[in-house]
Image 1 (cartoon, rainbow, N blue to C red):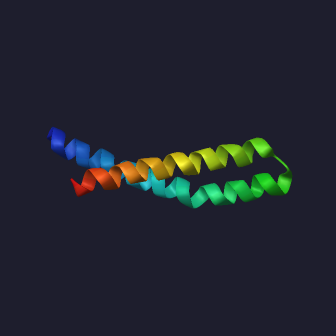
Image 2 (cartoon, helix red, strand yellow):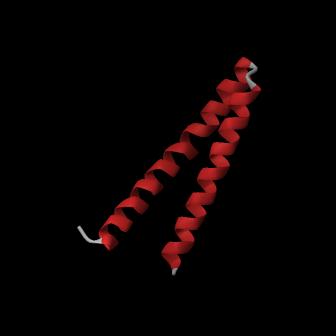
Image 3 (cartoon, rainbow, N blue to C red):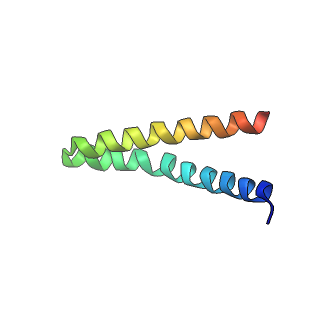
Amino acid sequence: MTLQKIGEWLKSLLKFATGAVKTLAPAAQAVGAATGNKEVVDAAKLAETSAQAVDTALNEDQQK
């Protein structure tokens, strides 16, 4: 496996992971809010923001 193939595989894995986080974070926020757990809400918001940043970086890299 070449380094280029490894890089493509890692990008694919990152896309999958960020998609999962962006899908699950709103549910985690809702559960945290429903249970009154502010730390869960904050962590889910941070995870969603981080996933969006990674997604944006991957998209910019792909456009190059």
